[in-house]
Image (cartoon, rainbow over all chains, first blue to last red; front, side, top):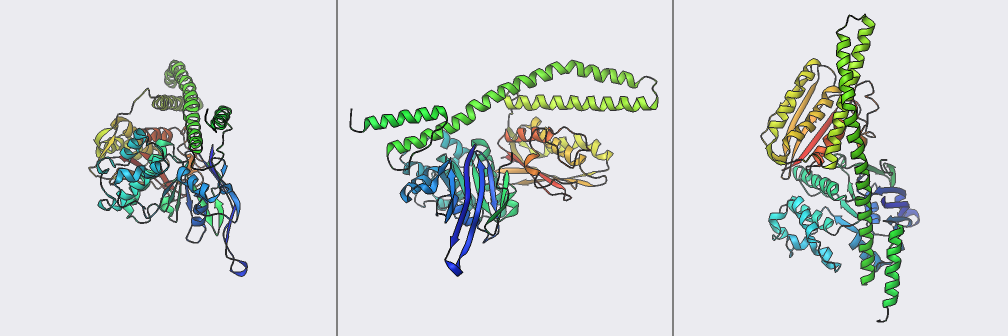
Length: 227
Length: 278
């Protein structure tokens, strides 16, 4: 089943002679439960692509379907709500709320959406991410790796259609990075969570089930799922 | 009835009907209770349809089939092996001896295949339960290395293991089998006189056992498929094998909350990494 699909996705910045085509007719499909990595150098268009996939920015032309919904047919307010419900973001910079403890950070997006917390599921997520003993700690009492584990838990807790991870280990040392990637991998396996990870790092990309390569705004390899 | 109730009920009815027909789609995203309900409904349909119905049916069928095959082939297969051995003891001319050897080799391969299939099937269906507990990775690596030593020696392959005493949570018996399968591949696909290296690394959440060889390597396009059942690489046709070892290894490792990854390239050798939770 397709969770994410783009059709001729194009983003052009600037006008006339200052025109820069950041993304050029990009087509890709991600299936339910896949762990896909989008790899490209800086300036390849991968960040632009991520922003489109997450509904953070609108394309110049082309479409993004999430669970068969054409997301850019939505008005801005609808798109914001869509994002909150359907996309779990994991950023390089963790983005935890400093005044909320670990548990509160994890369930924050669920409560923001006015939903009841699925305690059993959230408990499982906290357990597998090794956060059981630090639920009442504040983010500044945690290491970088632990903060990123909280961010992953937060992304998973709302059971989104897709977890979008943007350079999730960009601020971590290599040893801690390995743990964070391992956790993305095993949580994906365990919960059947679809994960799309953006990275410039070839070694990190190897962790994924599939590598989507982007160069100069073109998807050059891996746009279609492994059969 | 309150104003608007009728409209809501009609919409709910349509949602259910579309859900049953598999054509449900969310109408819009706004802050109303109905819009939230739509979201939840789609989530429910997606997850329940995917997991419950499909996997259950397929697993049940597979379980029955594999159990039938393994049970029904056991006796005839043992008999083939027995008669082949008897045949090999007869005074045979050279050509017939070659043929008898080949029959035996193929029968043994078939026996191995069926045993592996039974194991994967029983793991998948939960007939065998993995029982992870706190164990030393050194113990299972040593046992697996002992198991492969003879085969490595016959190809003059050096086994290097940098010993570490790290604890992790795993089922010793099954995990040893997973490591053995990886080692078996490493030895099988490495040239004579080469080296296979086992390295253990420790992380905050995981322990990693790497098996590194200098074999023929695996093309990038093939890497995603190698853990699939019965998958055989394009370059390994001349080697005997049935394509079940890696699949079984993955079943074992993932069943305990770990995972396996492979890094490779044609002519670059391969590194298989088994991550086990701590």
